[in-house]
Amino acid sequence: PVEKSGTTACEALLSASMLAPYAGQSAQRTKLCQESLLLFQGLQDQRGIAQAFQELGHAASAQGKYAEAHQLHTKSLALFQEIRDLPGIANATLAFAQVLYAQCAHREAYASGQESLQRFQNMNNRQGIAQALSLLAFLAGYYQEHTKAITLAEESLRIFKEEGKEWE
Image 1: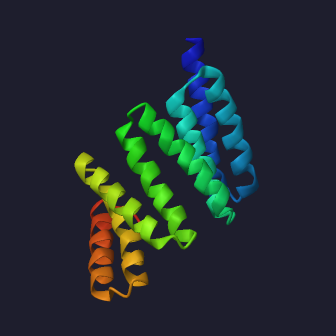
Image 2: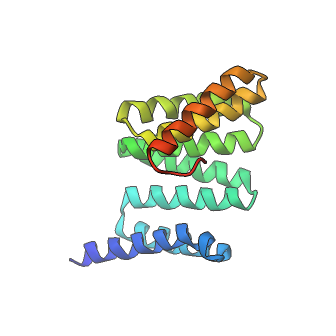
């Protein structure tokens, strides 16, 4: 019971960090992520550690700290791969692709985006598919492949609408 309540506290902190920007508390986001990371590390919860690194990477990206985000998403991806967490790998691969895009590493971003799309398709994760297609649409536009960009964006939007989500 102690380990379960410890995990629950870690997950609650991580969830609070994800919600902080929506409550106008972006400054709290990183602090809450770091607290959850320390707790997950104390529990030796590899999945939790990977999730905390991923959320820290998102927080760093939101602050324009792309080199830091790159490192954090690399750590997250490595841990998800180590524990063979397929949804975690797919999400981390997409997050990594998004950071590569922000760093203007378009070729690498495209390869990671394609990999994440394939992983999401293998799991039939429609929201993940839509997110990957959205990123790939931006990349196709960067490469002046406008027809492909429009097709990818429309497919992404269609899936988001079917899932009742806003387009990202």
